[in-house]
Length: 339
Image (tube, rainbow, N blue to C red; front, side):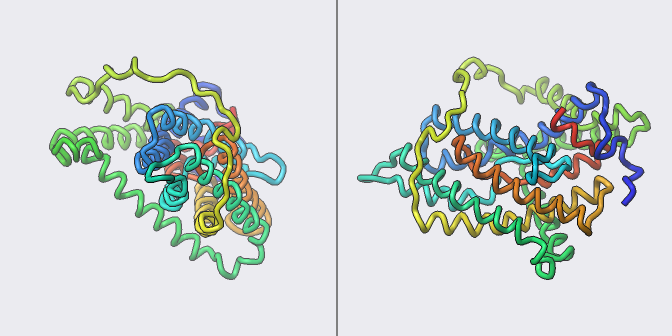
């Protein structure tokens, strides 16, 4: 398949460093909130202290970087070789909270024991997705382009709710009673219009930087509207160093089965995301080349989730929203993620 004429840089092109950094920054901005939200939700539900929460958030970002590198670089059989960004998955939140509740003793949650059960289940159950990757050629009659297309569409529809919530002001606006105010909606509209305007520009640098420029304009406007508060920046904790198996591992059959089922669903989701990414990047969406990419991507999805458990983070999956980023910027080069 020929690369799309809409692309400024194709899959194997190497953009100059300045343009690479622009594109990489935009992908990071697109996924940053999505990566840190699952550990924040899980920590809040299980009432972890601030230090533990901060460490889990840091590890989520750390593992996401490694996982994305593996996906894009393609190391041996692991990875798609596409610009596939990985991050902490929302799909696992409920079963993870359930596994964490096993750390309850005498009416009080033991944080280390809770996390040991969580990471033990995540580690073992990740094998399910890796096994599915090897069986993928034999499931083509089940996982058809129609099925994967529906999965991708459903993912996009689920993201609509997140976008609407953000436009309204998010959870903080709900708590303050200002959700959906003209100020919040006006700021969201300003960012949206700015991104569209830069994206439709004939200047390729403005198009590639459309997301960053739109967010910068929005941040400047928000600052002058008094919506940004820097007073808490000095209260952050120190550097969090990755420590493998910091909380140990414990195993519960029920939690492993529950998470294994989610890994199975995640494999189908990953297949749909890889199909969409291949299409946007002007790559084949059928045949041996595509199948090799899909197998490698799903295998890496499972392996990276296992790696996440080793480094005290939650399961990872390929993010669908970054496919849209490729379309917006016109940059499909996998070197954006690996430099």
